Length: 476
Image 1: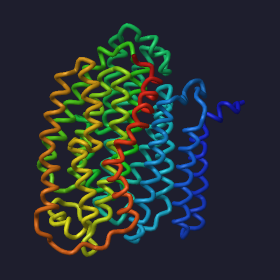
Image 2: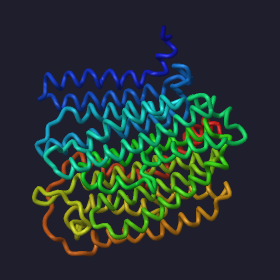
Image 3: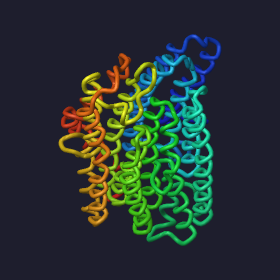
Image 4: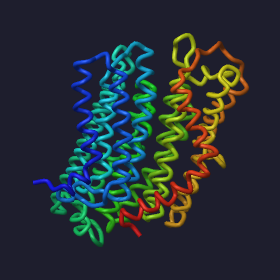
């Protein structure tokens, strides 16, 4: 018999699962009610965010579902970002004659999986959450069925995602075999003082599987192709909420399950972080398609987040959480700008397409400038504060050399952000742009205001919330 306390901890998940089932049936019997399904899905996500924020702390289902400050912090951000994805994506599909009620339902299912990921207390719950959200993402990547690139993106994502799931499962099976349990708390006892060889091999495979989910190098190969081929609003969703969910899961696994083996996994994470920064910085220099460019930008930025995680301290976890939330704002806002831009019905996705944009669409051009400068890490934009948190945590943890290497990578990546700004502000316009849709323009400008100057006020709330979430993971 499931107690009321157990159900109380699972209210956000139950809301999302129930709404997904109801809306799936409603959409099948009333296919013209696409807008109503979208509105209902957004309201459900916001309600789930409120339920998570006001819900109790504790654990349920034999400690496989954990509700603590870290999971609540992540769920609120994930559910809000998912609602924004529906608001941005559904009108985008409708303007292209693709009226699919499944889009908001898939966002709900992905959000449900992400909620399970950040609350996972054992390896089985971890895998269930990852697969539930991943299967929804595979379909979302190929949602624009008449577009060959979208179909290719979905297929590539699915095939490589299956490979990462195999790595993750193999690692989990090794950990279970050598540690004797799938629960993070029991694994922590088994690795106290250091992991044995068998557990260490399993942990490496597990880290590889999770690194794929966050598109960290050298497991990033799917990211540029999927970002280029998938619909722009879907890419905005891919680059935000799922990355935060995977990073929080990453932190929970390492902190709660392998906190006694920090010295062993810290080396692996530092290597992954520096490879990600290098790949994102140097490979991005050759990109002309803006979605591919931001794919490499996301790889580099995940490197900075992993560097915070590699510190192995509560301060590092806090830095990672702050970084990921501020990065979500930048990447969602920039891709909202791309979703708003078209010329004679054709999407504007290359750097050349942005020539003279400041004369045609000054509001969107200014917003894109803010996001580019923020991703670059220029003060006083939000990206600057995000990197300050990460580099400070890394230096305090004795990873000063890695922090300097990350800073050098940030300087290299500045070239492609500044090149885009130069093209928008100083090159001649190549033709009149179409009138941008209201919802995409509003999202872009609102997020640009948050990136600067509202972020200076938001950090007053975000910093202590992230610190509280980091402390709940149990690291010193």
